[in-house]
Image (tube, rainbow, N blue to C red; front, side):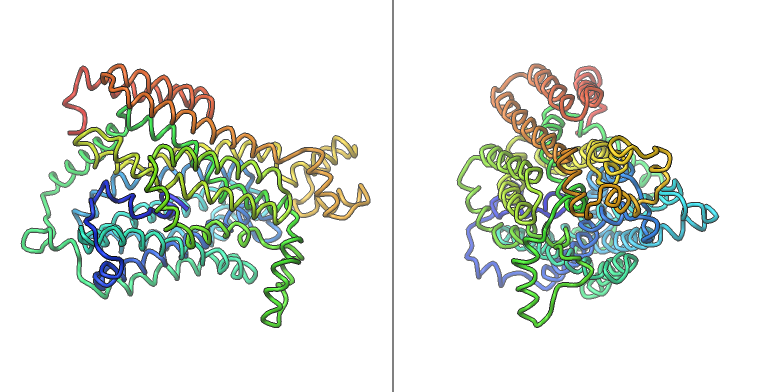
Length: 580
């Protein structure tokens, strides 16, 4: 997990922000007050609910109408994740300033309500859409009414998450001193990942009962944080005059909001800042497929009977039981992928110590290269143990590359701009996650989805009518191909995998990760040359255009380059319009 998703940040990563003084481990551990621990518990509950849903959500989005799902296609799923990524990653640029102004408790309280609304709207989206469409949405896969309602819920969840983070982290920062900060943030991110580790298995059990129960439970879990808010006073009071939140006139409030928004939009276009965000986004485009695409790929193509027989059956046997019959002799995808969070919980401290001994860019490059190897093995492996090996490799790279970005980013910032740069750091996640989702959605819909390829095989190879095949309900396609070819469902799966090679999509994301790595190496060289602002900006704009264009499309590369050029123009012609 990383960035907005809760990646661990080793203690040395916070040196840039707080410059901690040496203090013993146990001295730090016992120095934290009650509010610190309550805030950490709140974060763990929020992550438990969030990741409990996130890892199983790609399966639900594609679930057939007959099974109670919305039956979206992968392009619709990609579009949803695109907007989700943008709201969740870019909104904190604005909301961060308001948590200080209006209070951490109020910010978190409002965010919880938004998140609860998001979970419940998503959980009941098919019912709401049916009421709005007069029942038509229950008969049409991926109906526009269902998509609109579900996306509304998803964007509310994204907005709630984007609002929750600044408020919660503000609570912790207000209760941490300089001398005990080094351990504080490591504990915070470890508890983040503990919640992320516990969430998917819980959601896996709940979905066997009811998919609605998954969404309702997530809403209930995050709502528990309201009880926690009752246990302490507003930490921001210490910074308010007379302990009261300062309130301006309506005009002053509107003007202040507009200035924050204006500065946020223009600030992110500064070429050195934007260049790093764009170039590093390739790592996140690759990273988020672990949660957005891999669940569907495992469900469609991976035969995990090896892990089921060698691991799941013996573990359940220790308790005198057997794996759930609903597993069908396979290990569910969320259990396989959850190895990622488990590794981070166990080894983040060790990797944090190791990365502290080498240059940040070196650690990032090694991590990105290792992660790319892991992504390659995701495509090369169609077995349970193969997927587990790929996740181990990828997670190793993640623990090297992801947390180190804070240290590198802080050192990259020009003097007097560290706060500005660190405020935008999660924007690189939004760029990669969002654009990567659009690309992955289109690619997998055309050349990866098992049912889509089965329909294609029935028409092109078996010779059945295209209209008749298109009219088949989703759940009938694989049985129809099994009957037509006199094979079992698993034999059909292997046949389609060998015939169409759906694993090719992972090679594309390997290329994305490696291009991002090459771009960052060039970026590092440029920024260390001590060029003038104009020359450095021109080099970074050109580099960003090439890497982004080759990764996401040349139109996207052009937009990024044009946006950075606007900043350069304003700096030369109208510097008073730029952030202070």
